[in-house]
Length: 293
Image 1 (cartoon, one colour):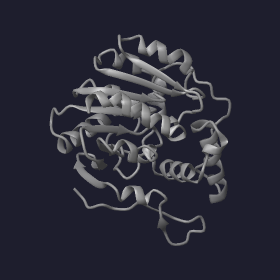
Image 2 (cartoon, rainbow, N blue to C red):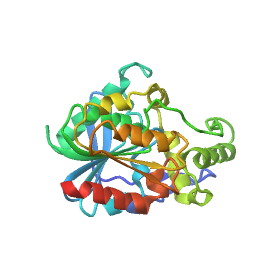
Image 3 (cartoon, rainbow, N blue to C red):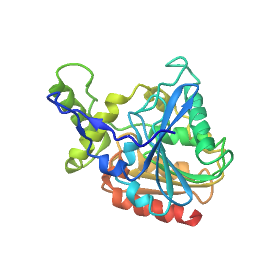
């Protein structure tokens, strides 16, 4: 395990690196780089208490939970990986579009969990977007007590996007930054005021660091069939304005798979609901997971 390391970001004029806006938060935890067959998988730990695994979404990293970590770590030990091919972790080995790459990604996470919390140890899990599909696969292989899925991807249902995502990978830096900012507002967040400086910094850093292509996996579906094998507690949370789903129809349909599963729509939220509606989500997760504290 490596010592703590603060992430850095460069200024737009290519000047010297400046501390990232989340550096103060990162100093509250510890960074663990675990060696594996595919190179390093980087994890972060915060807080103390029963273990809670937080999984990010596509084009993401541990920073998808930047507005939730302090609240949730008051009563939980949080474990947040950068999944292979995301953030600071190494690429996943094997064919980049291989049909089994989701399973290989889950195997890398399970190896890390065995090291960090012990083989066969039970834990709770919250996951966002593509991470929900990862969580559903993971829960078939380890004892997960409770799951909360936020803006879940992999449902195979209709999406309701009205704006096409812009290609931000080419052109001058200023135009690439503008494209990323527009994508953030049209895809991830609902209210214009939610597209603040922190959201922009996190989104740009994550997109630029992503090498794993998750979209084709999410679009294939499979969430419901995987969840059908899960018999623990489940909470589904969507922002009412999430463009990646029609949550008013999808949430009750998935919750009906098993008695006792619950769902909530947050009226002011878009896809990145735990950022835009962080106070409501932190309260929801605290209440939902409190039974296992």
